[in-house]
Image (cartoon, rainbow, N blue to C red; front, side, top):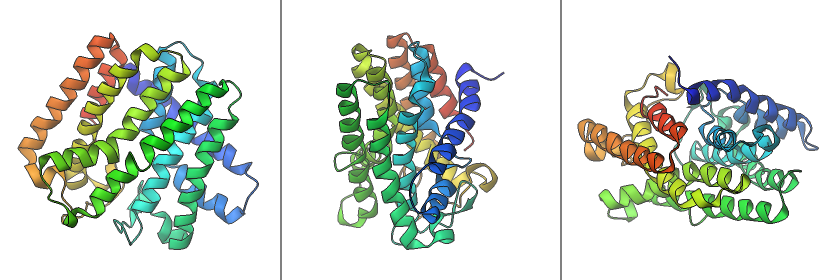
Length: 288
């Protein structure tokens, strides 16, 4: 039997893809750029981050369909980072979402430009939302920049690609993924509290997201190595890069995964939010 979160995600992933496709078609720009954006943005990926945002808005009693543009902005930031990650100069991946990566279809130059276009479009979408007050828009844009930029995701990516320059220990690994992955897991949780004017929940949501983000990355590392291509849609990760799996081994990783999931769930209990408990369990047991 599927949980409420699972049903919500299944029902609304297509909504995000359809909304993205419609908005791409309306862009006043190069048709080739539009094709490249659509190829990577409208896909069979999990869309976890925008769905978390919409899920919490629904929980707070907000008509989440008024904020699909904000949800799309979150996904644009995540997708642009993957386009750049997949480039030969970074992870050099050939497959993503069960199909060839963007640079394999459109070329490295277009993959870079498409990622850049996605990033800047994200801010425009938030600024143009018709239902948010300007002060809320400013806070969302500030957070998006903070969590995805030099204090967040990009900082984590630098630690990742330049591992040989640092002494990689348990704390380094945790901090790298807190920035690289965790920040964009926390972001939609905070967005939902700000849009719904539930600022009292911000600190606990950040705590929940921090633990969930670590658990999410550990699960990703396990799936990258043990997962089937048909499920995860990409090839096994580079074994030369230090991950939770090759740092700790599978048994320790399983224990850490459960520990961080339980910590996240304990924070959800404090918030009295059963949906977040279901979310933590859903991500714990995912196959892709």
